[in-house]
Image (cartoon, rainbow, N blue to C red; front, side, top):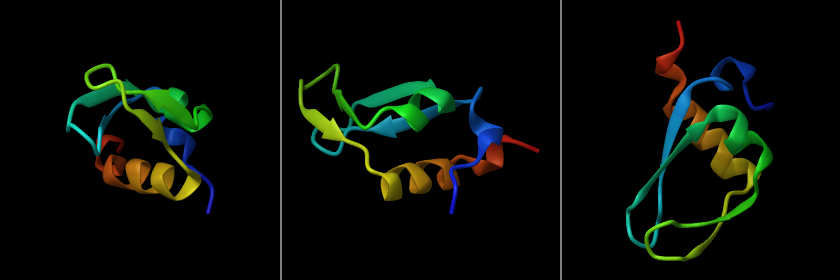
Length: 64
């Protein structure tokens, strides 16, 4: 299942599983990254393909 393009320009919210701090970025950013650092706790986060699919599914209500 491909990651939908409809959310590429929409701000998505991902919460750090370690501290709960939200990272809010455009869908296009989440599509291309796989690792990033939490701005709050400094934790190294991995966002694999299944996690990306779940994130985009969670936000699909933001597009008509």
